[in-house]
Amino acid sequence: MTDHPTVALLGTGTMGSGMAHNIAAAGLPLRVWNRTRERAEELADVATVAESPADAVAGADVVLTMLFDADSVADTMAAARAGLEPGTVWLQQSTVGVAGTERLLRLAAELGLVLVDAPVLGTKKPAEDGTLVVLASGPTEVRERVAPVLDAVGSRTLWVGEAGAGSRLKLAANAWVFTVVEGVAESLALTRELGLDPRLFLEAIRGGALDAPYVQLKGGAMLDGAFDPAFALGGALKDADLILAAAQTVRVDLGIIPGIRAHFARAVEAGHANEDMAATYLAH
Ligand SMILES: NC(=O)c1ccc[n+]([C@@H]2O[C@H](COP(=O)([O-])OP(=O)(O)OC[C@H]3O[C@@H](n4cnc5c(N)ncnc54)[C@H](OP(=O)(O)O)[C@@H]3O)[C@@H](O)[C@H]2O)c1
Image (cartoon, helix red, strand yellow):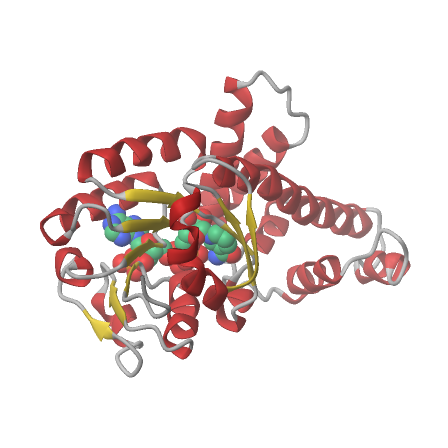
């Protein structure tokens, strides 16, 4: 076992790019692959940019996936098949939900890989700063092997159980994030439509028990129209659907998420899929 595992990172989008920088900065040998090659090329100074998923994973100790959804992860890992060696650790960090993780666990078994299900909390800035919170789950015996990677991308790793547990906790955490974002959007819209300057809402709650840095950050972005994506609305809509699907299987009657999902979908239909989820304010 090595303290410096070679990492193949598949998916250098908003999150994957920041994570790649921190993995390289920790001194771990790194190969990257991205469907749109130009996005991976930005990492050429710190990583080897691979032509294909199979080239990226050949000889890697840890394969890290940070792609959009379960379909894109499954397709990419299938394309990597020729380069994969049995027993390699697959660190799956994309948000894929409950059924998605079960599907990827089956794929891991078929490919002979050991899956560590480790979605993250935090958006673009924590990914760039290496301060994500990792909700890790998987076999105890590979935890040490992935520790150098998790330490590089996050400030904290919570080991929460067998593979799949991390993805379940991630859904609960995202339900909370969406509740806050949508709640701020609604209070701002209400303030505005009741004939007041919406900034007065943020001012009124500032510093009180129900304020939070995130509330002021997202509320300010909504009012400034600053929708550069930290977490794109299209991804948030995907995750709202994952939450609803998971809740249905365990018969939890969610009161808030269905309404949030409808507003996210409305904003996506209005053309804001690639803007930050704060753009849900535009659906009000
Ligand atoms: N942003 C956040 O705040 C945040 C926080 C926690 C977790 N997450 C989760 O982390 C994952 C990545 O999110 P992100 O914000 O980095 O998204 P992103 O910027 O949209 O990047 C998505 C990545 O997936 C790739 N991709 C999409 N469809 C693909 C396909 N069919 N085949 C191969 N590659 C495909 C994209 O490639 P191209 O460049 O070619 O499009 C890109 O590399 C998602 O599961 C998201 O839910 C995001």
